[in-house]
Image (cartoon, rainbow, N blue to C red; front, side, top):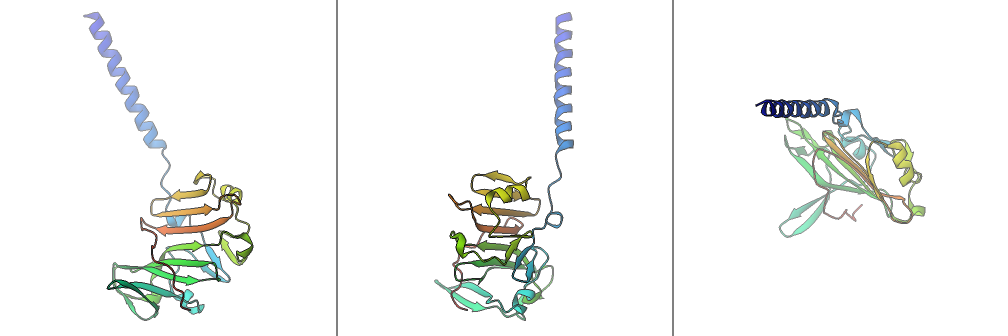
Length: 212
């Protein structure tokens, strides 16, 4: 009987310690980062874009060639965005793109809130920069979090984003309501793609427009 009581006590003690460790781990887990707490501003020339805050109107005012690609029947049609067209409440437009140079382009998504809005007032929910693998063709007037893309090497990115998950060719942060990814070329480790997405939205699969 004594052995049974001791065994039972040991089991209860083990369960108590295990439960205590689990609670301690839960209590010490860091709070998931929100986009508002960890914005990564992107500057193209004099235009600043902050995903989740900036609307489409400043891009249109900068005379950028903003094109939307849409599936019509079995093919893709492209047209320029009209700032006064309506984006229905609770919807998004994901196939928007514009060229920055002959070899560098950007894709963006915009979304409406709880009511219909002008397209120009729609908030940018995704920004993806597609850069050249050739470092000598990268423009020096594009900045990510204050650093020119010509200087944003894999090593520099690791210093800027020490809490990001990293592997040989990427630096990635998955927050509570966003995903930020930097991809680097093999060999040179130069930045060739950057994306910041609000929410779990998929990247665009349509090619950018060639119409200016």
